[in-house]
Picture: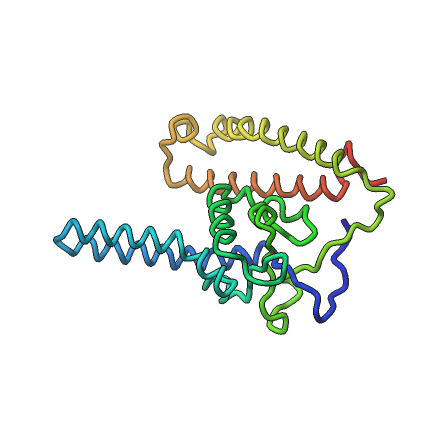
Length: 241
């Protein structure tokens, strides 16, 4: 894939991961505030029945929050505050069932869903691809170039390996990464960076958790990098001529 195509006034602008991450952070903050608020209320009431009802209401809100808003207005509050909108392939809002399915897929796949963004023409995560949707800039006039990409185009098709070959080679590299990852963790344990209790038993100190988070983020970033390189024909075994 080449650099992004020139931007036209009416051309869709697809949100970068950093922009989407900011929207998710805002939505998570709202969700945590709701949960902690409910816990405070539940701890101060003397009725177990009321506490259970409150808990059920909170769960229902957390499950329906994104699907309802995305299907009705195209964005959660986090999306809206970061100038983003979830758009169906027909240019409108997703139906409620598709929005619900999108939320379920994103929740199930977690961070792994976003690994496909660098290898797709419209910066789509897996849950976007499976529900035929994209995340776009809501108001282009309020967005800087660093916040979006335009649709990627393949520049030298004649020299590009087939999609099947790129897919197979990329999968092989991903499998290699999965094999190497626990070996790398074992090296960290032997070097004393990560404790044996955390690695083998899940009993982690604060510093262990920091190391675990950093290593996990680097691992996910590495997988995303491999996917992007593979799809662009830059991995050994499926390189663009």
